[in-house]
Length: 77
Image (cartoon, rainbow, N blue to C red; front, side):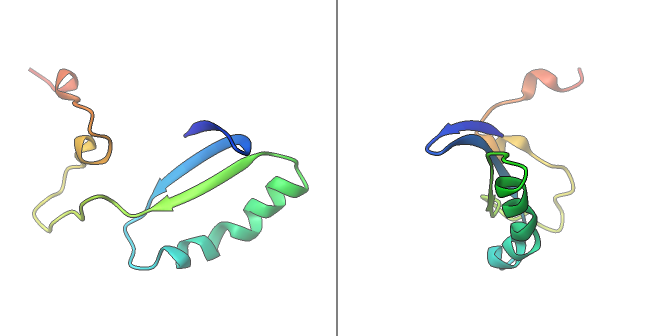
């Protein structure tokens, strides 16, 4: 989530692991337009695919893949 300036509003990025991003947009677009027009909320949603699809052996989410940030300081000793 972040704030944008063109147009001014709240921008949400949803990471979705599906083949067709358009199918995801079909699920929320009507409600998003209602929020933007009727409720006058400047909310924008950007669905994106993961940078790397998890493998079958991968069961733990690795935030480093998505953000490039290192979270090693949050691990248990």
